[in-house]
Length: 101
View 1 (cartoon, helix red, strand yellow):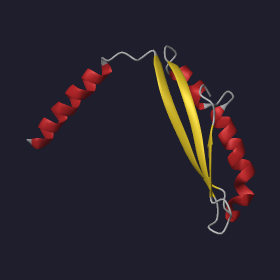
View 2: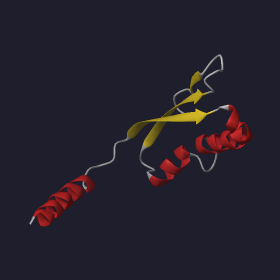
View 3: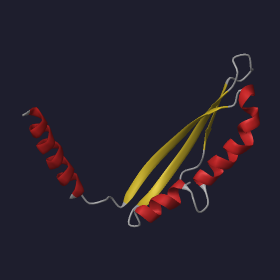
């Protein structure tokens, strides 16, 4: 049946992927789209704190990746685009952080 065929193909692909070795280095790009319109003003401090904790410290993305994959070196590149209200002078603001975040 089609279900059995699909199951066999999925299983075969899954098992072949499990046998692959992990690369020594992985480049990982992360982008954030952040709403900085007037209605979000009360939440900016919390958003800023959340982003900082995601990018540095004990609970950072890089730290968690290093714990889960200790043999792999991760190079994170992080960027953000912040958008404002339509009537603001600068509706968009782009920002990138240095490699190796």
